[in-house]
Structure formats: C-alpha cells, structure tokens
Length: 264
Image (cartoon, rainbow, N blue to C red; front, side):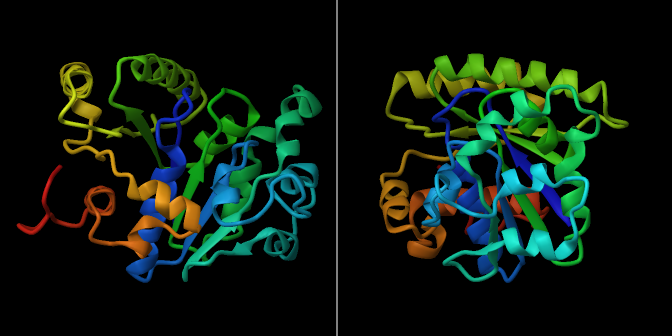
C-alpha cells in the first residue's frame, strides 16, 4: 500500500482535483484505490455525490470509536464510488469539531494510520485529501502517508500557503523517524499570463529539488467533470488536464516517460 497526502494551507489550489484525477488514472490502470476525505468541508465527498451533512458513517465515526475499530466497522464506512476500483472514506461536517472534542488526548494523531494498517491488503494506493489548516486531521494524514503532494496554484498569493505548509511539514518531521518526502505540484498554470509564468519561475528558483518539472494547466473541463460527478480522466482522457495528471501519476509511480507524453 502506497499512501499520498495532498495538502496545502491555502484553499482553492486544486487539492481535491488532484486527488480525484490521480485516483482515476490509477483506477483506470486496474489499481484498487482508496480516497480519504479529511476536510470537514467535504468537497471530495460531495464530488462523488455523498452528503457530508447527513452521512451516517464517516471518518468522524472512526475518530469517535478509535479505541475499538474492528474491520467490519471500517467497511461500514467505506463507500463505493461511481468509478470502478475507487472507494471512499467520506467526510462529515462534524469533523470540524474534532480538535475541540479531542483536546490533548494522546494517540489521536495515529487514528488514520491504524485504520489503513487494517486495509493494507485491500488497497494498492491511498490518497488523502487534507484540510487547509493544521489540526488533528492534518496531523493524522501526515503521520499516515509515505509522501506529501503540495498543489500550488501558479499565482503569487499561493506561495504564502506553500511557505506555511512547509513550516508545518518541518514541525511534523520532528515527530517522525524519517523526514517525509514531498513534491510541489504547480496547478492552474496558464502560460499566456505573466503572473503564471513568473510564479512558475519563482517556484523553479526556490524549490527546484522538490518541484515537479511539469505543471497542471488551466482546463475548464475539470469544472464539467465535477458537475457530472465523474473524474476527468474517465470523462475525457484526452483533455489537457487529464493528460497532465497522467504524467504526474507516472512520475509518482516511477513509470518511465515516453515520447508520446506531451508537456503543457
């Protein structure tokens, strides 16, 4: 089981789109894939047409009963999505209260890690959609993952979110045995705008060692796919956005690039 957390301490940078698109490409290759919606806003949950305001079993349930978490209880929480090979552990809006409820209880930073250990023989890939703030949910995601992906919108205000995320990562690394590897993923890139090209150049100058060499382009078809509740790679695999996420998937899974891989 390979676990990726997708996080940035700024909203609107493409976290959920990244989770859905990467998962779709993996699923289309036949890989069993699990998605975790750790954001109380529930964008990922809503994408697959579940209601985070009225869902009975969710990640919130797993935190409520973290001391006794038999496998059948976890399977009650698992939802099959509209795409074959993709399953979801959904969010509930009540997750926003977890920091206040849990306070300083010990062991609550490993709830998700323990959950995934019970599912390690069931799924090949796990993608965690993180909330945009530091708290028990993000701590759980970063403790459970093998690698952190940081989507960064290619505009200057998004760079502040990246700085905050890297500061959080520095704090988390103090409690891990090994430093968590991370990859910065430029998103919503429009080469026609000065802001886009300048921001991408700034990322290349400051973060070259941890920056994906490509970028996810602006593509209005992401909006169409979201409206349809179908991941873009499944809806239109030839779209610019879908092809960019396929290149990212190949990078993450160490699949060699081919001559047909066209960059943005």
